[in-house]
Amino acid sequence: MPSVLIYYISTFLLSLLPVIYSLIPPLHPVLPTSEIVKCVKGKRVRVSDNDRIEEETNCKLSIIIPAYNEQSRLTTGLTGLLSALSTSPLPLSSFEVILCNDGSTDSTESCCLNFSNSNNLNLYLLTLSENCGKGGALKSGFESAIGEYILMADADGATDWNELHKFFNILREDMKGRGAVIGSRAHMEGKVKRSVFRTVLMKGFHAVVRVFGRTEVKDTQCGFKMFDRESGKKVFRNVRLLRWSFDVEVLSLCTVMGVEVKEVGVKWEEVEGSKLGEEGLGWVAVRMLRDVVFMRWAYAVGIWRVEE
Ligand SMILES: *[C@@H]1O[C@H](CO)[C@@H](O)[C@H](O)[C@H]1NC(C)=O
Image (cartoon, rainbow, N blue to C red):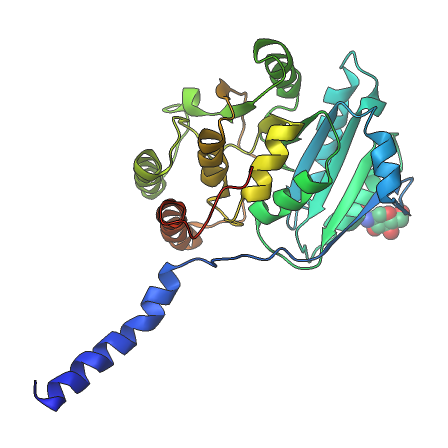
């Protein structure tokens, strides 16, 4: 082969490297360090591991809320949660709420602290040293949770908080306390108005999830999911996609690890303040697709392994 041809071919291949690199998500994502404190009357109170172990016997349900710059929606969200918890036959002390502050740059933290001024909710603030994504924030939250059951939910309260009673009953009674109850908006399809662009992206994503996702769940992305403690912890210990596609990995892990999954329709309402404009959405969609395909590949060739 003439050397000039080799030169052109190799230059071409080298120029592809950044493209190839951008196709691969981090192989071994590392969580930032985190610290957990209890919010009591607007103050941070240190909690030791022993304190947490002692509380374990009382705590029936941990509610994990990832938050990134949620100052405008958090107080309303927490107020809704508190009133839902107050209607439970269980005392308020049998719940704990862990707010995972995912490197917010606004006053999310002070909103959370201030919320503890006016009530006795067991409210914890878990601060990640830097932003790492919703999946990462939840991973830290699940690690710290001590409840017999664990619910992950979005700060904005888009899913009606009262649904947690329904989920709790389904998981404890119908499923004999084992498995995962997954919130779903699939029943609302057709009632929600979306731009053509969003609809196309969504359909494309669903198609990729059907092929690569190893899950039968129709709405993988709803932020409202409840697990028994053991299942939730073992699934989240294995999660490696820290950003948008972690939901798909969670459900895929449930399938692989034999965690029974039940998809249940929820009352859901769009809340103002979405951080993603249409211009950002295209890129996010590309990365989500990339992550789902990569995940399947990484598990298939054994780069990622599931640890029980
Ligand atoms: C929290 O309360 C303090 C003291 O009352 C106040 O200065 C601060 O602005 C409040 N923060 C938020 C985000 O409401």
